[in-house]
Length: 80
Length: 195
Image (tube, rainbow over all chains, first blue to last red; front, side, top):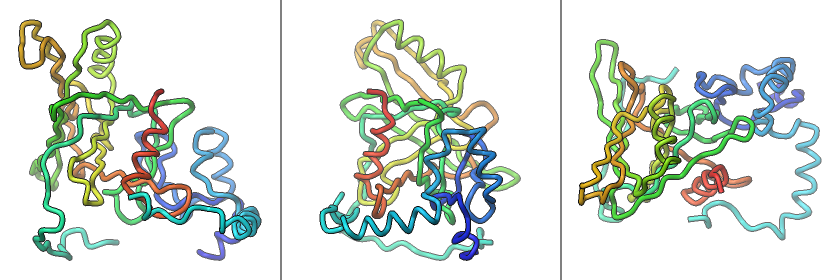
């Protein structure tokens, strides 16, 4: 499965998602192909925020994060 | 497949974080059709995300003096345990707009999120009506009532013949980076609230 995610264009954020409110929460990376993702994105535009960056862009984002990481506030535990 | 009918942990009483009663005098209500939920990948008791459809919003109803409350109760059925849910709250006002909202809650289904006074747990913020929604079943205004001073006494419960398959879900939404906390969940919720 890990290999699939590496080659996938559309990657969902962790969790089981509802695409339509009230439906069963069944959509996850385990069962979502790129073709399906494109179809759902077209029909339900609001789900765009449920997707993480495509794999290729994640690498770019990680590179820029490392550069900026010294200026970012550290993690969630401080929130409490 | 998880083993759903075997307990796998106990409970140890401690003095560090004793449980406290009550909920905060605020209830976040949204139309069931307006918000898509994301659940934890392994645990359906945890809601990890709320996604608004188009420009849908969450509406915040505020009260005072510890007058809001929630109840969830197991209801035994022939096909396993189900849960009934109730949210008691009030509106200290009287206007056409309030009446309009109450009418809408009586016809349509809503979901509601409450914040427990007991914060030292991963279930401080809870979602009611996750599967079947809630409807307004009591909306009483006694103009001469001194307890509420003529405000509305309200109750949201499961629609007729419907119950929830699980107890109220814990809402736990992570920030952009890092783990989910009470603060990050409240921030995510407030971001959806109508200004």
